[in-house]
Length: 257
Image (cartoon, rainbow, N blue to C red):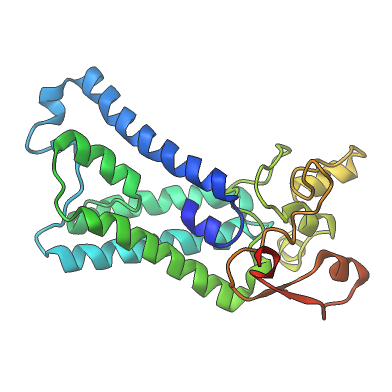
């Protein structure tokens, strides 16, 4: 998911690197701590095997397709919920519900990974590298495909941020356009549902100075348009939107040469 949001221009390169490293270190540490708490005989039991992921009875092809499908579904769900003001606060619940469903239905096919770091942590402890390539390739391919589908139908400008829960007053460290959208007032979906505006909108209603982390970098440069990175269509410039014009389109990728 980190690499997909990097592809969408929402995560800076160095942030993506450290997020990936942190996930791998966390997975390894998690298995190690579990071994200390539960005992290695418990985790090394053949029925547990350090919770290592491996293709089921249907083979590698079925496992690959299953990981591809569940990763696609997870990413599409996250993008759909997190980029709608009325649904953003429920993103975590939706993702958690999918994990519960996948653990029950899909686990017999591939062990249910969706994350290369999760698989790597268990594989390292169990010294079981069965079809390890599958768990690096399938989740990434599935999530990138979901992002492509979302952008094709909704446009790159519909991807506001990679922060899954924006319905709060905490600062955002990513290339974010959430405040820009909420500042314009409730969206059509929000008006229809009767939901309240996003957190940045509420900040303005209270008369407080809005957090600049979501719309400006420390130097004052807007990040709404500098978030472009990789050629996934076009977006309307912030200045044009502010002036009420929608004709100024900047190709994604141009800002990086």
